[in-house]
Amino acid sequence: MRLIIISSFLLLSGYCVGQNINITEDPSVTQLLEKHAELNHLKETVEGWRIQIYATTDRTKLESARSQFMNRYPHISIDWVHASPWYRLRAGAYANKLEATYALNQLKQYYQEAYLAKDRFSPEELLK
Image 1 (cartoon, rainbow, N blue to C red):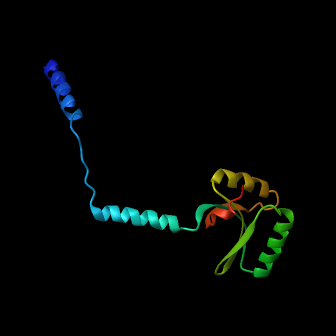
Image 2 (image 1 turned 135 degrees about the vertical axis):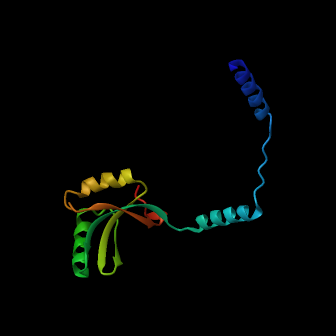
Image 3 (image 1 turned 120 degrees about the vertical axis):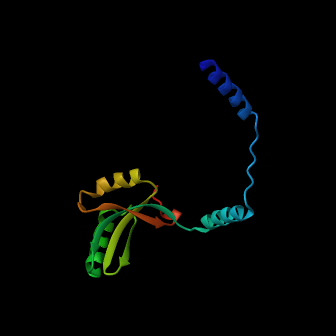
């Protein structure tokens, strides 16, 4: 019985290897994939990481924190975003989480509440 099962398995596996498989893709799928690739090439932003160092509802406090940060860290870019009612102060532009975490650990000296935030930005903003 065992011999029959083994020999039939060997015969069938040899039969399966010899077959060619042709896949015909629907033209609408091809068109959709091409459109998706085209749209991705048009994107002017990349996804990465920033460090959120401050959030407030008071814009004057935000401006004060921004100038203080720029004096301490002139080599790190800083920007703010407004999502009512919050003003958020975010520093840097990092391609991967490892680089952002390293910078975050350095900033924790003055900004203990800072944390990493995913963001989209132009490729030119990426810090080297």
